[in-house]
Structures are given as C-alpha cells and as structure tokens.
Amino acid sequence: MSLTNASPEQAARAAKASSRRLATLPTAARNAALDAVHDALSDARESILAANAKDLELAKKSAADGQLSPSILKRLDLGRKGKYDDMLKGIQDVKGLEDPDTLLMSSVGRVDLRTELDDGLILQRQSCPIGVLLIIFEARPEVIANIASLAIKSANAAILKGGKESTESFKAIATVISKALDKTDVPNDSIQLVTTRDAVDPLLELSQYIDLVIPRGSNDLVRHCQRKAHMPVMGHADGLCSMYIHSNADKAMAKNVIVDSKCDYPAACNALETLLVHEDVLESVLPDVASALIAQGVALRCDEQSRTVLSKHLPQDQAVLLQNASDADYDTEFLDLILAIRTIKSTPQTPFSSVDAAIDHINTHGSHHTDGILTASQEVADRFYSAVDSACKFWNCSTRFCDGMRFGFGTEVGISTNKVHARGPVGLEGLMIHEYRLSGNGQGAAMYGGANGRQYKHRKLSV
Image 1 (tube, rainbow, N blue to C red):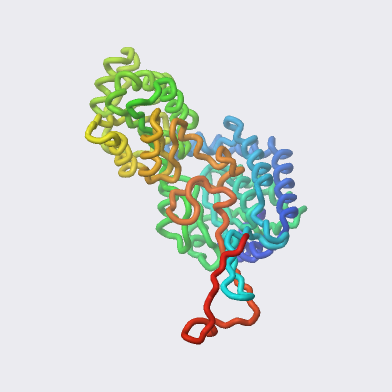
Image 2: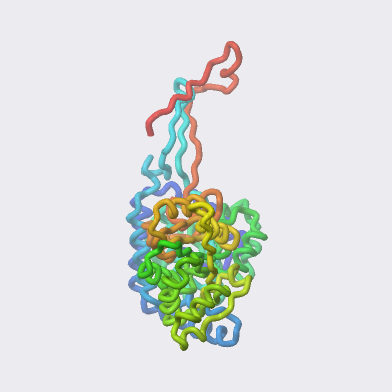
C-alpha cells in the first residue's frame, strides 16, 4: 500500500498496471501478503490507536460545534468494543476463505460452465477480478485493512480515499501496511491511499482506469458518488431497517431481538430504525419491548394508536418520554437511539392481509437494506421472504447480523442494495465477476449455419 500524493490520474494509472500483475500471483503469494499485513498491524496496535486518539480528539471538538455528526464520531473510534481485534481477525478470516484461483496456480478463475460448441471448440465461463476498485470512506479507519485484505485475496487493485476526520488513523495504518507489502510479492501500488485534497471528483471521472466505486459513509457522500461517477457505483445510500412484530410473535423473543437490533450499535447501517407492530399485540407484546428500549435510552416516536396503548401500560416515568411520530420519521435513518413505531391494522380479509400491509410499508419507506419479521408462522415468514424487496431478510433474529464477518465472508467492502452483480454484504465473491474463454483449433463463425454449414453441438461438459 502506497500513501501517495500523486495526482488522481497518476494513482489510477499505477493501480491499473498493478492490477494486471496482481492477477498473475499464485495463492501462496497473496496469502503470504495477508499474513504480513496482519502481523504488522498487530505489532503496531499501540501506535495506530494513538493516532486514532488524535483523530477522535479533533472529531469530538467538531461534534461539539455541530460540524460532525455523532454517528460518524462513533464509527471513527477504532478502539471501541474490540473493533481493532475484529479488524485483525477479518484479515485472517479472509486468508482462510476458499481461494478464487481454483483453475490454475497463476490464473484467478473458478470455472462454473463448460460447453462444447463443436468438436475442438470449448467455451468456459470463469470468475475473474473486477480490476481496480475506488473506495471512498468517511471515518471507519478499519476500512483500510478490510479493503486491503479482500483486494489482495481477490486479486483486485484498490484506491482508497479517506475523509479528513480520520487522517492520522489512515496515515498510520497505511504506513504499516505499505512496509509489510514491501516484503512480499504484492505490488505496493496495487493498494493506494490517496491523500491529495479534492481528489474525489477527478477520481470519479477516470473510468478508463477505475472499474467500480464503493462509497462508505453518509447519504450525501453516496449520492454524490452516484451522481458524479463515470463507472458503476456499488453500495447503499441509506440503512433504513424495519422489523415487523406479527400477531403470533413470542414476547420474550421480540424484546431481545428488537433491543439488540436497535441498541447494539445504533450508528450502524444495519441498526433498526422502524418498528411495525400488529394491532393484536399492541397490549400484549409492545409494552415489554418499549419498556426495555426506553431503559436503554431509546426515544420512541409513536403513531397515535401505539402511543395511546403505551401511555396506558408503561410506568409514568417512561410514558412521559413517548413522542409523536411524524410522516418523515418513517423515512429517516436516525443512526441514533431513536425508533419510529407504526401500527399495522388487523385485517382478516385474507390470511396474509396484515403481513402484506407490513411488507407494503417496508417496500415503500425502506431502503432495501435489511428488514426482519418476528412470527411463529413459517407461512407468514415465507410470505415476508418472498415479497420484501430487500438485500437481506431475517426471521426471528436481529438485523445486526447483516455483516460480512458474521456471514462468514471474513470481512466486507460494504453492503450493497444494488440489483445487479453483488447484493447484501460484499465479501470475496462480490469482488469477482466472470469472463468467457473459448479455445479452438482454427474454426471460423462463417463455417456454421445455413443449409450446408456445420451445426453447433452445444453439449454441456462437466466443470
């Protein structure tokens, strides 16, 4: 990894050249580089956390002045809740994943289709690296190690552009990784951290070198990239996650799952933002859930029906904390200890009318990220799974499980709500695309078709 002050075009050109060399390296060389990066970051823990502390000190002042959101401040803290250890573990987990290069030791490519078009004319489809990734991130200094490890393993080059709030952290991490890679076969320019000011917009125009943009940060950052990029953008602008409590949901399960979904890490994109409650369980399930949330400091913004019920059932010291929800609250990613609650009417017309109403709310107001249902019914859960238009759909478990590490991907470059290529947490597999390779012995397309031409066999072969 080079900490470069080169111009955006120079950095992108160098990354493109390095990506071709990286794709020819065998598995052992790439895994050795991951070991080197892991050990170097482990040894440099104290100095990196000291650099992160400097960023945090400045960020807290900016947050106090209203210049930095509290959610970004939380994401910046590399020492929070074992985040540094998770970063190190992610590198080793990526190393342990099944490698993409299962065809040849010097060629990345997993073959998943082979067809004999004709005698001696064999077509195969196989995986290959995307090429050069541009990752633009705010806060989140661990992104550098996450991206570096996944890029090396998948034989992609990566250009990283960090926000000013994490300057000292990413400089320290980049320097450590750069020195580690110098002792390996992985080209240093294959992972670059751009420090040039105002580099984002010029980088977004360099589609001749950069193949994919992955923004990690605020809605404004993601939407800016989507507007300006001359190449595809992968990721999500919002993480507006909802949970629906169906009429037959278990009370204890609902309380535990919802508290975890909202309170484990409220600033995360997979944290719960909207709670939908079937009318039949407003008095039996919701009060316990609401009491547990308020005890954790969560502000509840309720529709009229849920607030009326909770005001009656909650202790007075909790009931006075209830707030009225506005229409805008159901379209808001709070990233804080705030939760919007809406009642789903009991509609007995068909067996699925109520869950369909919840599904309609999620598909209308959600961000297609992660949404869940709490129900004892397999049929209702299957209906939810089939009809909700989200990358991740969960039944009777926390939305916080939407994560590359928790999915067993080692780590992730982000969570995608795209409808093409990768969707959901994007790990190693999501950084691969496919190509077609055709081998023959002199055939020409004009030989085929017509009354007297050869006919294709199109015989499927084993892979």
